[in-house]
Amino acid sequence: MKTSSERWKSFSCIIIVILLKGVVVLKIREHHPPKKLLQALSLEERFPTHHPLYPLILKTLRREKSGFSGEKKIDFYLHRLQFPYVGLHSVRLAQNQVHFQVDTLMITPTFITLVEIKNHSGTIRFHSGKMHQDYNGTTESYDDPITQVNEQKELLRAWLDERGYTDYPLETLVVMGNSNSHLQIDPSQIHHLDRVIPINLFNEKMRELNEKYDRKRILLSECHRLGKLIDSHCVMNETCLLEALSIPPSQIIKGVRCPECNRISMKRIKLRWECSFCKARTHTAQINTFKDMYLLYGPTFNNKSVCEFFDIDSNDFAYYLIKSMNFKKLGRGKGSIYHMRFDRTKEFTYLLK
Image (cartoon, rainbow, N blue to C red; front, side):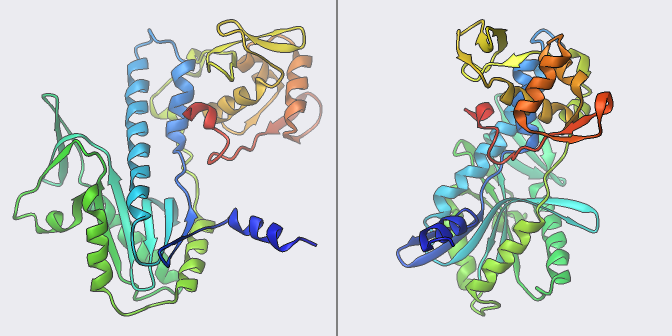
């Protein structure tokens, strides 16, 4: 039988409870690095720098890094709110076969807020259904995030209605997370003036919304149950970056990744892997290489694909590496295939360091 401390440890893996000056904050779902970011990080070392598509990979990587960094900036402000709420990050749900994503979702007993976070620098303008970024003498245009978050709001409302959470006020905010951005919003754009804010005004806006809604819809304990329900229905984005950028798999640099310097440079020498650059030695370099393979090609593979991706010519050695990972095996003999399973929220820190 588990001791009380063991039971609490098990529970704390599911939900983080923070007590700040008597305010209970229930944080159910942490920030998850997007699959596209992890794929781009893997490709950065596995794609020829002279290839015409390499700049596109770097552009994708910069955009994904910036977006993920912006999403995490909100934590500084969330921890300073002085009213109870349940928080979830990186929420991705499906409603009538349509997937929608919310950067941060805040559930209080009186209202729910969907927060879309943008991390653009420069001057930000809104015109003709677009958001325009003026930076370093160039202008780039994006879909209007107000339109985006309003669509998320309607899909979430339908999702909640189907589960009995009707008549629950939903609010939306677009938060500009980059302190080097300058908002230019025309006075006639009333909705943008009210809903697009710099991150330093986030808590002030949340206090305003908290005072606006004074009728309690559900108890805080029910907010927790709703948060757990949402978390249990979250799905990963399975976008394949190779397909999205039309990258031919034949161009991927094959080989084993060094766990120290991250180069694709490990060679098998006397029962160990040794890096030809930093000279690091290890018995387990295959782990991160299988993770790269999972990100770029998906969870299923066979013996031959290991030989190709690891750049080795021995089927027996490939089988040895597969067995060392204890992957699920499907089929028998030469027709066997294997299934990889990694937790994208925890097991790819080697790419993020």
